[in-house]
Image (cartoon, rainbow, N blue to C red; front, top):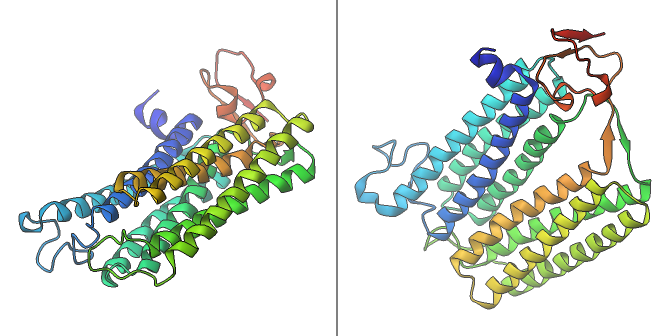
Length: 331
């Protein structure tokens, strides 16, 4: 098997690139938070150049310039990884257009982040634009996670594994998680960490916004506990139960960090951990909804089976795999 097949053609390659893309997008959320928390948001005062004369940071710009320019470089790497994931989805044998569309969405959203970042610099780190930067990252995680999870599933219709009422409860949990994250963005825009010492805030009452955010967190935890009980009541698959428990654990840890940072004066380290926690919470909420259904293979879809692949890599149930020593095709 040549290098091209190993890196892009085999079904498992698309899944691996999707995972790398997902991790990279979480990483740039964390480094973007580091830019803001170190007041390096205007370390490069221009965009797309770092200064009027230089594309890169200069020694005169100090550590703030290095941090901001480093984050820009990482953004370019995130786009490159997204393009590699798109290439793997396109070259996958057999090709699945659902994966190609998701991978294209990741590429477009990753590229749009550079534009939003540029606008935030042009507007002097306007808090609403910076908040939009984070919200776009959350939307990007939807596509990146869906690409990763769908690449490990067969191409076929999805059937629910739990009653419809439990499915609706899972969706409600995911919706409230999104609202909580949005409220967290508003709280950040009202708080002290602006990304630059001279950047104005959004003008909202930080105490009131923090209270609303905390209320949303408690509602989210309550719904998640209800989901855990519901999954046990309907004897849901173990994967769904584990996903719900994992989500609840992330929520509790994220709530603990949130209260700790609030009562300790918002130290930079805890705020950065809270941003990472927001990303993990969102991923856990989305992943939970995927465990409430299962896709079945399309019987009429041609599948190319390559010896050495796992059944799920080819999108087939285990019993459909033949043990012939040569490449076979199911028609």
